[in-house]
Image (cartoon, rainbow, N blue to C red; front, side):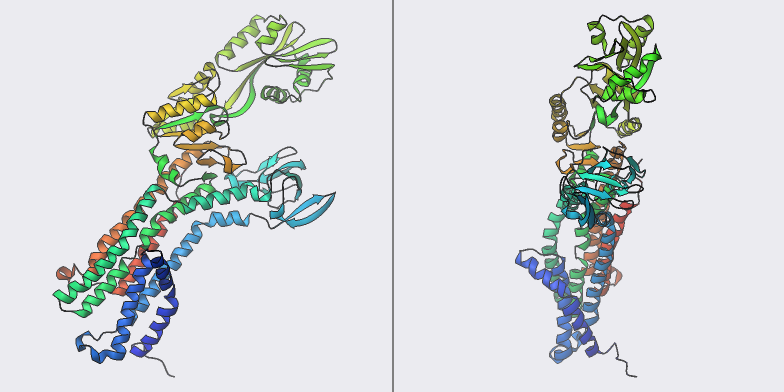
Length: 619
């Protein structure tokens, strides 16, 4: 059986030609496009280096008798191997990048292709992307919710982990909202679309991730500016290398080999990958944890903050009022209090109704709301009163010693105290307050340990602010502030030369958030694109602030590591390729090994960036 001799130069010529003009054609195309735009990139270096080796070898093979015998050397293996190893490196990079964007792919896979809508009582299957605001959609167990909506019928548990990072399913019932990308688990739901499918949360998240991954922080743009000058400098160094070896060592062979080695090893692949691949992994990891970076520049900025400013209600606290303590003087009248507060859309009323949830409902003859004071009603010819101190004064109702003691004790803590009276007698007193988020203390302590000053700004009174500030051990607090006051406080800090991070609910805190260097929106509304925050926490866990900061620190560290090793690689590799170490060690760098080294440098940068997917960011 005939086997071709791989050492045969004509055999090498055939295969080198296939590699050069088929596999390596992408380098030529990219080089031409870059040159048309007056740019010089790594593709130009590979093209010049490999084509020079190939062209010289062809000339030697077919017209070698025109050259001195001592320079008749063939470099087909060099041109072919360099292209092969560069493409292999790109293949490994592409696989690594594919892994880096796996969260994006999961999000895209969460977008269902079909959905069932109800029109005039009949069910129809349509393309999910065609759902518009107001459509009635049926969600069966196991289905992905295709659009943001409100539940009209049914109840179920919904898995939001892919969107918010929360692992525990959420129970939803009639009147609750659901977000697209969540998975319905056990029951059939009928929902009304609150917006079109194209405007839904999952699409907003995908758009934000694409924007964030396509932009670079300042350190990345600095590297890009260096790369613009890097390639022309390398071309000059390659020419000087050829001249050096030809003139001073009278060796066209060494001159040519070293020139090709310089062109190949100096490809700025690793330099070009250092920032974007780290950004892709950082932004993707953040999204997986329920943290959306709207702008990758924040990854660099957040590591330099001096002051962390927090809103109180809905940020450090849950924003949900709750009865903490009660004094029940006569429990016979609790059903009347329940009936009076029921169906009143006020946080305090909802808190009392929840607290009295086990009592029966009594029929009322009338019910009237007195703005700023409370509610009055009639039942069995008795006047039922529930409200604050003002309503007691209005009806000239006096407090007993026990009631007065209860009032003073909880008023000092900053709680809202609500009285319930029948005719002239107080029958119950409730102490109502907002709950601190369970993780708020940990977040404040973490920031203080990092040397960050913590400040709370609130519209609540001084007593409430002092109580919350004391519980959290916050450095400073300001009370009785309007949204404009909060904005002015941020400006004051910035005028002192401080880098300020503001953490709020992203809606009524928009002025303060936009004035800050970094804005973090906690438990934001479903209209993500309109949020003022630079970072959006998609779940209710305030520890997302810790995760965002830690992830940014790690991401920036990885970027710096990548850039450092990319520069070190070129600082060592280029002099080695030039042959500056030849007089000392008697070693020259073969272009083949230069290609391998160049590819491995790119792969190492990608692998280093993939570590972002695995590191702990919650402490």
